[in-house]
Length: 129
Image (cartoon, rainbow, N blue to C red; front, side, top):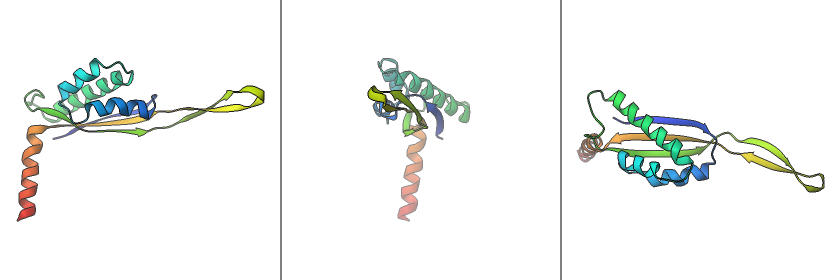
């Protein structure tokens, strides 16, 4: 059973967040936590917190199961553009430059590798029949 965690209106550009998100996509959860912990980017701190939240959500859905025993993986991670604050910056000769303060939305889906494998096998068996 998969668990989802969302981070809305994070005041970081989408591009910077995607660079960090690409590092952990498809990795085991504890390996991904280690990567995020030792990453220098500021976005890694927020993603680490979000990943811990997704793990906790998975534990709440699957009471009695431990994430260590089920080989949790980062099944899907999406980084989408959020709202953009538009401001003006004074420029020379009476002009103004547009300043865009970008934000993003992040969604992480965590699932156990063990539980998802038999479900995929059952679907292929039904398709063949």
